[in-house]
Length: 251
Image (cartoon, rainbow, N blue to C red):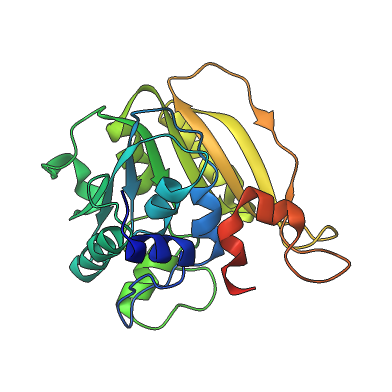
């Protein structure tokens, strides 16, 4: 039974997560990814590039998710420690742990066995080194741009960790969707569900949430767009809050 402090920390989520200074700070796309998968009881999941653990811990705190177990990987030891601390504060240390590992050499990690996971979650760097202004600091640059691992590195690691017919869940930049689909096809990760994310009804999609099945058959469901902000009030839409209640943390 969770203690009063743990219950309070859970009610406060995602506020209060420890995030080391000078590192990449999670944003709304992490919370959206946490709310996209549909895991089954007893599933084991792997998160690539876990950071402070926001995606994995959000998934575990969803009211509609059965008891599942996760492993997060990150190259930064400080972020791994923060993810472990955050899991402990939320009373989830028995269901989630984080390890130091590089997605480019995930096959060498003793924590990751091949085809051991039902789900893989990934919020890979959105932009290549050549695209736009680079973030200050090496750690933030690695999280936002492909200064170290690129999209293909993340997807190859996912294919390695996924069981046959297992599911990859990813959030990515809409304008780079053709690249995402091309790499998925080469790795036999078949897109099965996709939902575009729009800031406002009249705007183009900025991101996509996508689910792909390892060695899956053809057939893609294009879900209705998720519009984050109301055209009338300018605040978060009711649709967005139903999909991801965590977005309302700063209301």
